[in-house]
View: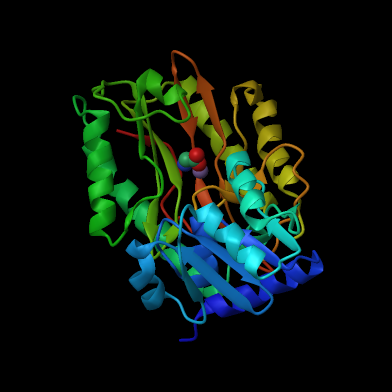
Length: 360
Ligand code: GLY
Ligand code: MN
């Protein structure tokens, strides 16, 4: 199978030319993996017309040779930023792009100093992110597998939800099962939140023990063959009272409306509105305190953002989460999250497990 990395660099080179840059400096690991296949965690990638150079230290030189093709390896001398700046100075680069969202002020100052005054630094935020948002068929195939694994692991965790079990125990079992299923690890710290703690959208697992008549929010994702999944289900331990069922129905309806709104050409803001309007109809929109979703891929949060007013239009190849939720401090929270791929003529929900309220 031919490597996708060269084709991606070619596509990036077009954006680099369009922005009239001589080189783009890439400091973000997921971006250099996307463009070269290099999985090391320290380095800088410079992409310029027709050439890619990785600057890294001795710990990673074998890895660069094993994982990449047509990439020049330069050994780091001094700090990474100094080595990068020096190389640009040697190459007499006049217009260097940098990702302002991924480069700190301190890093930029070091780059400027080492490259010298002949190099002009141009903010080029999101260039690689734009390419990454459009998944290739081989990426979608991996994301499908990652989503199925996350669903299977979540379904297998439900029988553990017996009164007395700790949040920590359930989280540990979930992450163990992910790895057994082939994942290199969780895509983010697994959320297992019981009772009142489920009102915290990003609760961290604790030693809290499950009691009857509590909500449980399970939010987890696996990294499989480099690609992330992200799924959330809410369970009620006991027979749900009528008001809980009504809340759940509202969130599920909001999620269905947002999933139905996902289509190539639609703005991300419109998808967010679709969820928010349903919750407004139930007078619960005030309790929906985060955005409707986010892009998913090599990282768990990437372009685009499905939030109020976002003008980005969905395109074939985008994969996004749809995850409305409502949070009632002191009572609990409900969130339902699935991963959705946008195709030219339809959409595909990658996470396959049922979404109805589970009462245990
Ligand atoms: N599932 C965690 C998050 O999206 O932030
Ligand atoms: Mn998410």
